[in-house]
Image 1 (tube, rainbow, N blue to C red):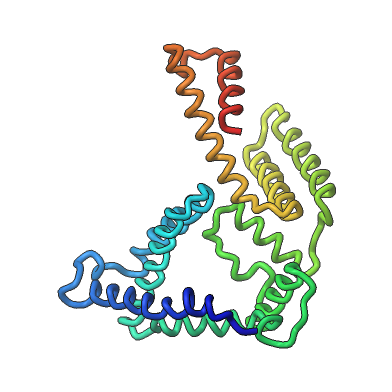
Image 2 (image 1 turned 60 degrees about the horizontal axis):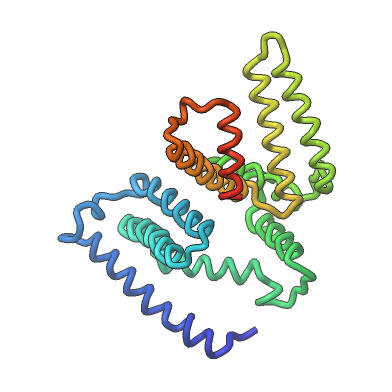
Amino acid sequence: MTLDDETRERFVEPSGPAFQRLVEVMAQLRAPGGCPWDREQTHETLARHLVEETYEVLEAIDAGDLDALREELGDLVIQIVFHSSIAFEEGAFTIADVMDDLRAKLIRRHPHVFGDVRVEDADEVKRNWERIKRDEKPRGVYEGIPKALPSLARAAKMQRRAATVGFNPWPDADAVLQGLAEEIGELRAEIAQSAPDADRVEAELGDVLFAAAALGHHAGVDPESALRRMLERAEARMGAVERLAAQRGRDLGSLSPQEWGEYWEQAKKESP
């Protein structure tokens, strides 16, 4: 497979010089006489910035704002260059090593593009990817899934990983819905105890959330994205309720349950 001339001319060829200019700027910032703040950073001090920039990229994607996405992707790339610059100074590796390793990995894990393997669809591509990963680094099914991931995202990734080795206790969405109903029933039973055990309630709630994440897997929806977008809707709706209450000279704390219901239904129409 070869790239067409337009893609090579407009996308591939300009990227090399542009990336080199970025790396040069970072080297200047870290050099003697550069920026005091940049010079004192370490992998550890930068960690939170990497997380923050990642979520800002996700926010731009959720908003469908391509101008913001362009900016936030730049902020994310500079974190990668920053860490690589520190590693170079420590004698560990260079940004070129990072890029070369990544290029080799992409080629190795796409034998249907760069080799003679044939695939039927995207699902087979994903299965091949996981199989190649296991062959490269034999490990436990869940090994390598970051514990620092948001819990809902981690649950979804664990379920996807398990499915690649044939473990799928809920074969379809209907089975998950039935399982989710059962888990909710067990949670309800725990809460209904005369003296609910907080640890048991927590465990049952965890089972409910894990089943909900599995439903996303079977429905082709990322549960972390689904919850993040739901929270955006909830925030917009609360803002609408605040505006409606202010228009009537009311404070939120003084609203009756009936008024809350009325305002919330109106807010849902504004932010479906």
